Length: 137
Image 1: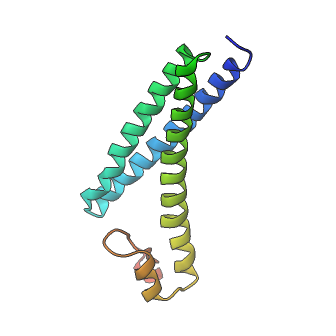
Image 2: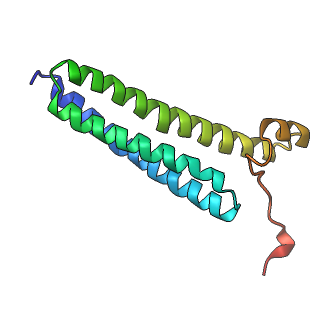
């Protein structure tokens, strides 16, 4: 094993645990959203997350076995691509930043309802609501 292989495997192991954490949290979030908003189409995220998590885990296993050959190089790039595209870009930036952080920031900035409906069309997006202070039980 070359001197970089243990470092690469350790980095991949850490990235795997981080990716799986994001995948687990996103899965729970989408299952809960599908249930409370009665939107079963949100469950597509579960399928994506299960597939991505399985592929990431398989890549880590293969990387451990083939750290010093061409298979290891291909597996490394597959691992990096899947771990970056799905949990980070797909669910981190799109879901986290666009669908949640930006939507909430624009809502509290009192952005025009027309622009909000354009950026976050129903029924794909649920608009935030502010609970009434008078509705306390």
